[in-house]
Length: 67
Image (cartoon, rainbow, N blue to C red; front, side, top):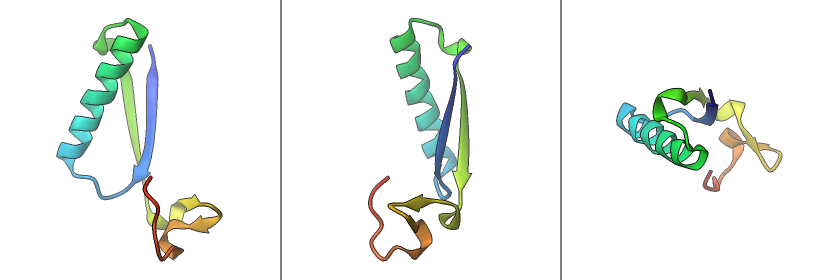
């Protein structure tokens, strides 16, 4: 049973998370040739002071590159 973990910044709506869960599950199901019911998805949300990109905390960046 595959378990997929996604880490992302806080702030997405429940509807965005629903679409993400559906899309990722469908893609994994097709790629692996297994039913969607066998796939688990965990979404972990982090604060801007818990993510560093290029050695800088996300909250300290003036221009934030897309993630």
